[in-house]
Length: 360
Length: 112
View 1 (cartoon, rainbow over the protein chains, first blue to last red):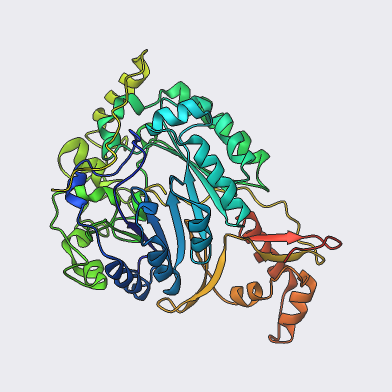
View 2: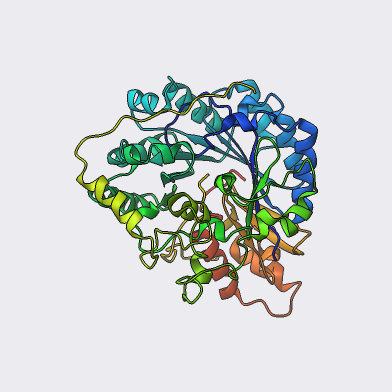
């Protein structure tokens, strides 16, 4: 087994926004016992020893951790490339200046190009503060990625979203179609775009990529419900990436908390032992676990059977082929959702995720 | 951050014809370092890692935005017997296509 390249450090699931497309777990109350500063220091040092090279400081909103500068410093000192993934709410000038020395890259989310729509999706007035924060990031000479999650209610605006990213001087823009985990799964029918919406967006993205090729990277994450083959989720189960949740659980991906696998926690074991031995890591590593049609498929080393969490969510069995694949015996589950999305004339209301859960 | 770690899908070849007078440097969001675990030099980017092989790191360590490509090739020639300039240019071109490397042209000033 190889060393992991990236660590997703989910520092907290608290968030000032209430985006309905959020993939954080629905049972947020289970994650209120957050790791301490010292525990994160140890995790980041252990991650670097394990071979991790990048650390994504994410959440929830990582800026809600008062010790974010200390945690980022620990990552930086361990030699990790640190990437702050933020709503930018709480990114004051003073805080930004402190973080500048230890954070290599900043990703700021925005929900749409237009203030009222963006604020509506975020569930809180935030658009203008985000634009201001993006300006601050640029002013401090930080590389900036603008993150936009696309869905039925904003994908038609993708040209304007790209224009906004260009105006704020982003180095990269990441247009990611919603992945249906956590809260987003609850809102799937309100979020899933139609085929016509997607096709129009792809034309815009292709043209923008060509036009902006020397100035801005345009990353477009396709919606897997509309693809023929599943996404190569995380580059394979526990192959390249790992996630540490706010309470110290270690997972191959942030959605894997939904699977019926035994917990592994940095509070109980060193990261290296968890990566190499914990059942949550070994369960679907490699190709031995695969059923047919994956087992005999030429693409098994390309898409790794797709997403285990999606297989579990749709079929109740995490070891089945991702139903997104047209070869999956369960593919009808996906085509039914897609058909409904294309027949639906109305737009359903989004159910916002709560900002936080009461401490238990 | 999104679940699938997809790098920028740039299949198209670069049109940056690396001239001898271009002055390459690493893009701002890219960091060159050494990975102890893998015993290789690497380029760290927001969502990707490029593991360097052979003399890649030697070339990139010279890409400071001041040296020209010709000067880099000459410098490498003092260390190694055989330095094919075309391969250095192709290597830099490939990284430029992935926006890991930027060029300033001959007469232009660089802000280093």
